[in-house]
Length: 174
Image (cartoon, rainbow, N blue to C red; front, side, top):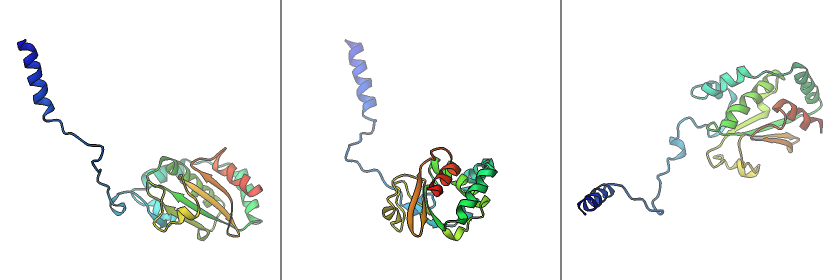
């Protein structure tokens, strides 16, 4: 009996110090502007070459190997088309950290005019400060949208089907 009383005493003593939480308790949200390491809104490609983004961007860019014959084919396809690219990315997202450096290396190799590239950083809810994510129905990142004459002709969402280079070629061959 003394043992049972002792166990109940110990149990009640320890449980008195365990904080209780209600389902209705609110978790404080950190305002977007205070979240570190997050690109939000339109940004220039060279911003990826600055800290803290260079930690993931530079190694993945350097690691990317491209088939030169396929690059030449892509250049040939682009001689026949005027395209623009919209990129919605999350600098916090693993898929963006993998795919964005590959896209940038492809664009560098084909001498793509970066004036025809718009990169937009989104938050964890895939929202851009200017609301452009709603216009283009962005639900995942990265989303790269290829436009011809202002109309969408294809997009990549999260990851490529075969490779970013091959998928890019397939879109332009249609």
